[in-house]
Length: 463
Length: 168
Ligand code: FES
Image 1 (cartoon, protein in one colour):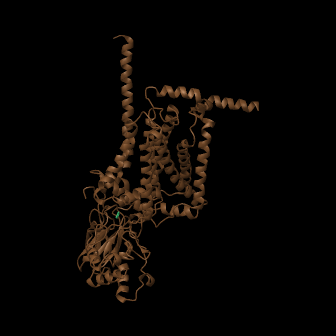
Image 2 (cartoon, chains in turn red, cyan):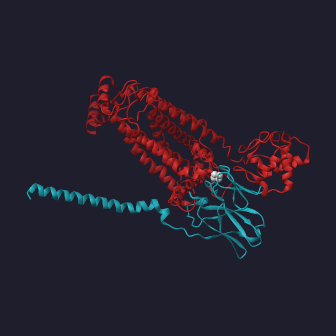
Image 3 (cartoon, rainbow over the protein chains, first blue to last red):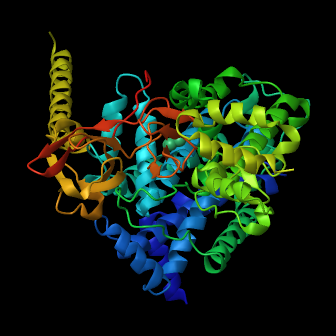
């Protein structure tokens, strides 16, 4: 025993373990920092999980445009626990994005970004964007048809940047088109470049936490005054501070463990996203849709008025970055309590509702034609009239059904036409069909009078 | 000049010299590093004509999907070297080839034969037969590729993925 102790003393003395780490884990934190403080560390837990499962995936993955898809099939179907591994990495990414979001909202609502923690906020904003970039590039590395088309969509968005748009798009794709260079580049971004920045900024973010201390739980009426805050914080810690380990850390550990447990359960029972078709850009029968964490952005671009869209693709992200970075400069002192900052709470709620509704809209994707709509059945047509029946067939063939619903069958883009004849006269319908609209082609030039007549007969029987 | 002062100026000169040398070596080393990052901008890919089939394969009036290789496929590109276009035989002697990329955000449009429309799965863009916008968010007509008939063979000229710029 004594001998072991001696060894430990030697190791500890020469390596400096206690000297370096004890002050870190024992650093005093304000009392009362309860469950709302666990989201930052949960993000870190997810990140570590991502690094480890990412390395494990790299052991099985082929980072080349031609081989990546096959290696994913191998990981999914053949490798021992490969599917679970993919699942953990996928839900780990999801968890990290959710935790980053919640952590950020918590910091905003309790104004923990105010003096002297401005840099904590700024480094956090950088980490937010790096995390999103990881999510996006990770989705590309799945390298199925979804990955291919997502990268084309990203290239198109970069293409809207004035003057340097085209070179940027070319840079992203690795050339004129998708090809051999594309995946190698995405791999380098996802596996080396972005993680390197994340390690650096996370390290800095944590150093700042130690240097400036965890923000104390806000109290209404207790204002932050840059002139006196640091001294006040120091005195407060001296009086009532508790060591981080174990008085605050136990919550981080429980919550982080629970998060990871949920991730593993989801990976086992829900599994990773299914692979779509091979990454062949010439297979055009594909319906690209991003992973859930990109879905809100996807919806935004689908719903935005086309006229302002090209501008918003460029201005939107820049403005968001600017506003987020400007926040701690715009307000760095005064009230921190959410009770006294109702607008901050209201604003956060609005952002959450906005993102969630975009997400739900994206799930529905009402703007996409439903190419898998089946021709109407006799029961749905519900008529013995031969003109009506052939009109119903044409309604499918001419693509109307992709966007309009009839008795539960069809797309969501246009209005449901199950009872259209109750709303519109035959004349009104004719005008709409011939002239179309913003969201509907003008069929006047592409449909014969005979066909038009049949479709009208069909629609006129929808009562 | 007395001794310490002389030493000081000598030292500051040497500090400047050594940091500049370090900076210089960093700059030199970054040339190949940055070149690999900017490689796609440094090389120009010449476009080539690709055979997409015999003339007799295409019926007048029909619009068909043709698949061909990119201009300069790398050995490790695999199926990603493929590109597609929608090719229509307008008459005995003339063809029109449309890019399969939607001008909105690049998703693959499909030709709906009976409706005579190109439709995009992503955000509901629709184009008429001639490639002009019929509905939805696309800001401009489908891009056309060059086609030619070369001794009974139809050939399409490869081209970059069409990128819609902000001015469109
Ligand atoms: S990409 Fe075709 S409509 Fe958006």
